[in-house]
Picture 1 (cartoon, rainbow over the protein chains, first blue to last red):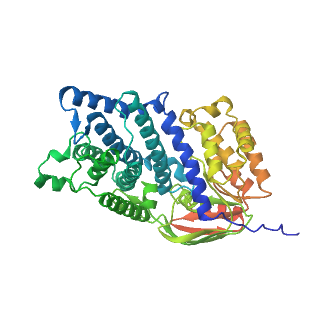
Picture 2: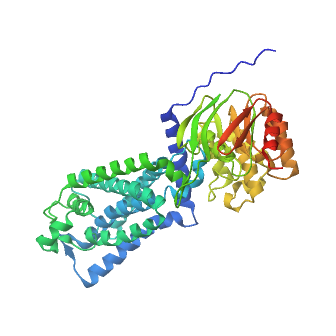
Picture 3: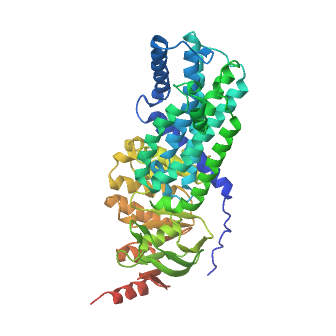
Length: 268
Length: 221
């Protein structure tokens, strides 16, 4: 009997596999994010819009009309958009491993892949939301073109990186220690107040402010306003380098965690 | 060919580690040889399948796959509940590098799984039989050298079982199977060789009948 010739097996390259997994996961995430229910896609835009509208209403009718030299609506909108980039990226990434558990049956799919594809999706959504809100602001007569568009983009990217770093770390922590996820969610509230989104940090005395300046998000939120209006009074400590180095450190640390705990996360 | 080299496996539990499920397993599964895994419940059959399929990593030792190996079929794993059957099927095609010819594969899967209009409903609304039909169709739609199945032929109704059997028989020409089953008939039907698992150790038998005999001898009288 002639042995049937065994065809030589050539495996796909690891990079090739990873890229096809990222593409497939990206499409899978788009479906879940945009069609979880009938109006899921609408809420992605409505949520920040309502937040902004409420804050603008509160601020302009009962408090101040100008913050740090620029109009309150634009001040609020820019801060909220920047902070939202961080918050929604971080929040979505935190759950990325848990919500894709079934797919780890396929050895091609690793926990880190789910985070990477979700990070890209959140980046795309964040930019779309920002563009729509930005265009919408002209309809409501408080729109203004950024004086330094590059600065705005740099801040935006930095806030996204912060979200990615935060999400990488919290996804590992909340997968391995489920209770921790709840505490992380609570942490978002004080971060929101300390980042100068609705409270101008410049009004805080210098001796306390220097402590708040350790929060990298504050730098991003304030710098985006500077990108819109060069005459805006920022906090004196402002440094985009700090924002970026903090973000990259978190991403590095998050990747280390994945290197260490990847297989345990599949079992968890 | 699949090489299992000194594989140890234990799990992490809420209080430390479990006992060793597999302890120093060495195996070489030759090409085109269908193998049945035999052992009592908890002997580590599914663990070994998971490791061979790559869904989990060994605590110690390594596994080398010198051929394309499917994922572990059975028990409805690997399907995302919120997505429809079709979306799941597309996902599986894409991660296996078959993004280009998705339409043909979709047609095959839809026909084979017999899900009809349920193919476009979320998988979480499926019965367990429907899930395993879909899984079975998914793995057949992709060309592997080795298919790993965990009691998969036990799924579905009588007509589907018959169809699955025929499909498996047809595969035998180009691919092999590594399967877990408690049904002696199924094992004898599909497998040439056998692996008997007992207390963390494995024993290879060239002939499935011998493996079954060794298993029976190990049972308390």
